[in-house]
Length: 392
Image (cartoon, rainbow, N blue to C red):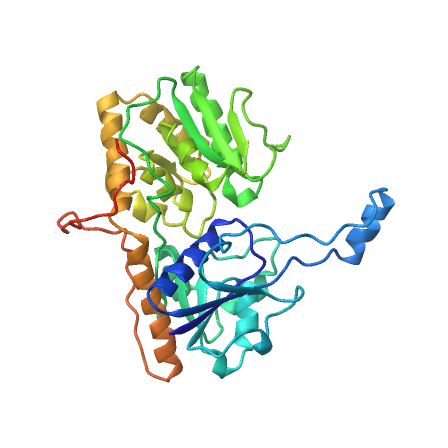
């Protein structure tokens, strides 16, 4: 197939990374893949006036940041300026994929020659800083939806009356995220991602850590994020924190922890869950994103949303486990994620694209979605799961 991905401004977010992996693996399968994105929007007049009044001069046009599409074998172009992607920007293709609510508006207006229209949804993006009505309207557009977690499939059915959504959960690259089997840390250590975005729940995680530290006086925190900590969400004084670690170093932060916290109020999927588990680190999570599927069967701990007390109790439980029991939990976390690879995920995604093409030919399809992370106990495991690329 000829496949076009339409992206917003590129950056080093998990959602962009997922699209880049699918694009590259589809190319390796023989598909002709093209990616189009837009540069940063220039500063608006109000921002320029405000900067001048504060004596800071004019704001320079933002430069394009590094992205996960750098050095890939996928053809990628950026439009001449920040604007909607139009017919002139994309080649004729079999399928064209929107990857964000705003790009869905653009793709909806493309000519039929640009391909059957698909919409890859990685979250329900109704946040207070985004126009809610426009976001919700994109779910009603006549494009085949492909999404990443069972809760989004269920949401499409219950809220938007669409029961033909394809499910293609992401996987984790065990060449990037891995760790040898290990013991508990000599100093009890908890990890988390730091963000000031409200729905990421950093306030909940920090409160839970503080409560647990009252019971475990030497409890240590390891964290990373994209920005300096805010005075409104201060880190503990003894925390180890790094801003924008190199991609090949992130595994080191996961693997130095006894447990990883995800306290989000909302997630599309929650990639840190499977990244930490691939590094043999048990996860304590709210039921956001795909956490209910992934942490089922004893591979992690689910806690109630908005409940730092229960999360603190889970921290105490994990940190106070005897070493043998902690190692069993660590291995259960690892085993849950390594038997579902990016090749498996791409097969699901590719099938969703084919459905989009077939639906555009006016055939009637019914899609039955079930997360591959729901693995019955009696299902045989793969003979050759993706292996950790290190000697342990």
